[in-house]
Image (cartoon, rainbow, N blue to C red; front, side, top):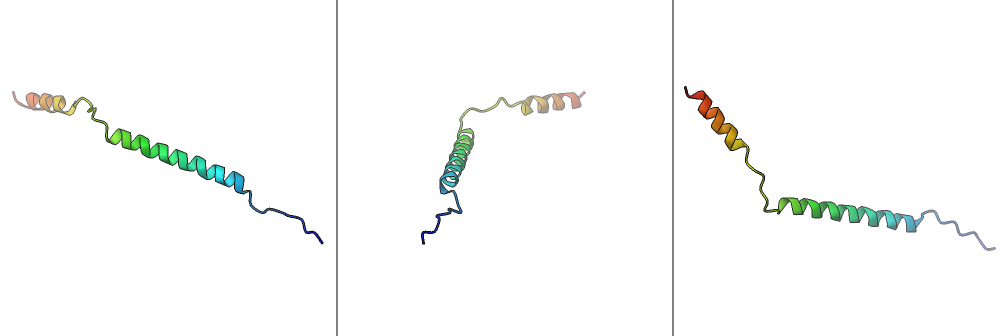
Amino acid sequence: MNTHFLPLVNWGLGTIMIAVFAVVCILLVAVIFSLASSDKKAPNTDDTTKESKHTNSNP
């Protein structure tokens, strides 16, 4: 009267997939946080275009 043990869910593979997903999420948050808090500023090219438009409009 021994019944066969038939697992319906593979918990090992599921936990590995959840762990990989968590690591990817943590890495994405870290990259976004790093980009947002970086002190390096891009050169402002808008100032030069505004000046050239301003000087071209005056004869």
